[in-house]
Length: 140
Length: 248
Image (cartoon, rainbow over all chains, first blue to last red; front, side, top):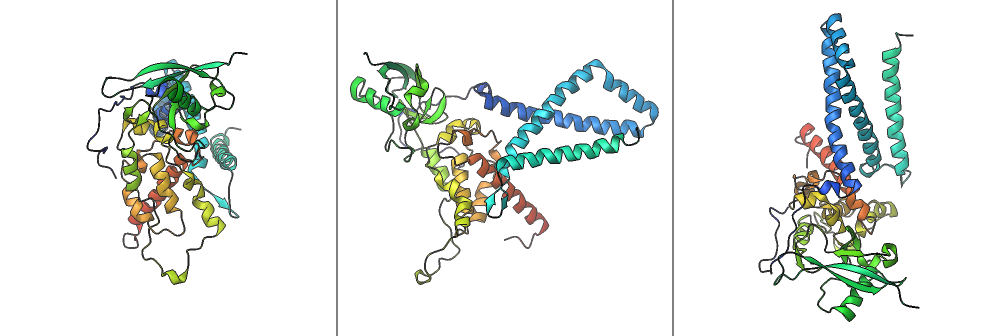
């Protein structure tokens, strides 16, 4: 591992360009990467909201009603709409990248990327369906 | 009929005279069978012999002629002028590397990093010659062949913002080539390389922007190699935690 960028000892004056602070605006793929990284904040936020929801639920009916009231406030609704868009973006981009990291071989051949992406979506749908069933089963 | 021309805006930098690079425009014939490298050779032969750039094979094998073409890392021997018509076409040295002169970059940093990951077959003990060669099945060859196609052209470094922001990062090609030897059934150096590359500036420096794979002219998929390496490193780490004595 290089401990520092090492160059030859005797050399003429090299020109080194400083990387712009706005390098991520140069191309769509860079911007997409930065948006994907930012989307993690919203993932963490939704985890926190879920934990807060559990806490409200365990504190009794009144606390839960207050929590639901808070969820309905326009500011939080807007934040969650934006957050939801980021979460979808996060999911879609990660599923799109999964085949690069996952090399699955079946019968000596590498499983095609599209199949790995599709199985990710299928697993997502299956988990969502189970959760929806758990949440909605008492309501019918 | 007059020959069509296309304008090239070529980055010029003379370390003795210039503080920063500037662009010089050249008009070259827009020929259907010409690539950007042909245009640079035309400039060198007919317009300005002082232009400095690297090239050798003209056929996408040597990896010498990588430059930024309209802001994108390209092998100039594979970038047809007609794809950029009507121009102008902006030619710059590979991004993130120090510029020696005009379009020539300083690559020692990359060569050291490449050497650091030990891109050669490591054996605990060589078997005697009398026992013959190390045989491989087509499936074993297939496991690493893609990564062995790397021609060290450094386009992936010029596409990688992580390398630009943190010059200590080992970078896409070096890690992909480490993985090429890790996946080789004849090699026994995977753990040795893992110790080198599991540091922060190794595989964990990569944030999976993925541009290295997109610009690679040989379809090596360095981003894939790095993510697969991360998976191996994480599994090795779990093994070392769960089986402290069973670890090699």
